[in-house]
Length: 284
Image 1 (spheres, helix red, strand yellow):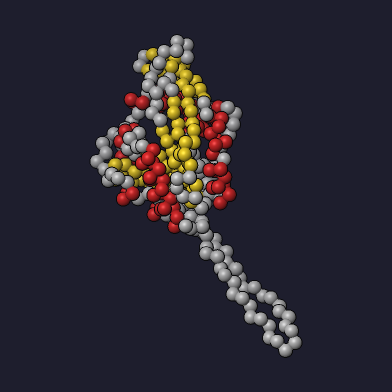
Image 2 (image 1 turned 90 degrees about the vertical axis):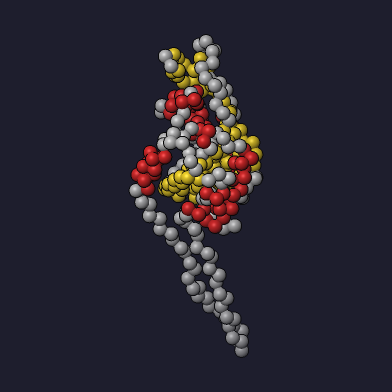
């Protein structure tokens, strides 16, 4: 197993020390990512003319061939206007970072994947064809950002139509093995080190509030304790919620910073679904 669980646990257990990259570092990383130029070729299949032989009754002319209706070309590229826009947020946005990818996993919650793989299962993530992501930072954000600064993160994926439908249809099965999971990992708080344990829970708490299908995934965790002594070694992580919305063959994964609420997340999910309509196959 990779070292990801230890890293994740240290982040969860020491929330007071969590600090985000400053905007200049984020911009630099985005510029490096944008240098990967992804060329997407859209293949449009049109029906060619169809030849048919008509046998006419004596004295009658053959019936004229009926015109063939051409299906609209499938949309392939994900443009930035399919994402949430600054005007959709109640606060002014100072920094908007956007990235694109090819063949990325539709990752709903990193720690949920760790929970599954620790039990010998696959992480369960569907693979996308194309993706685009963005992070929205409130205007006048401090140079050092914390979890309470209300960041908005959105990942938008294009999948095959069947995979997009399946993702939401099988979400309960994906989460079921992690309804209650105890993680064990090393920790260090100041000069004290040891092995800690914490219990994590994931539940699907609401469905059908946006798009062609939607789900609200909530994660809660217990305060971590020393495995030997049972003494607490940190505060419980704040509950986090993730909205997963489908429109046609598009899936968006949307989350707010620690200052966000589930009603606000659902509102933004509805707005995001409307933005996705023009880019989806089929369109709304």
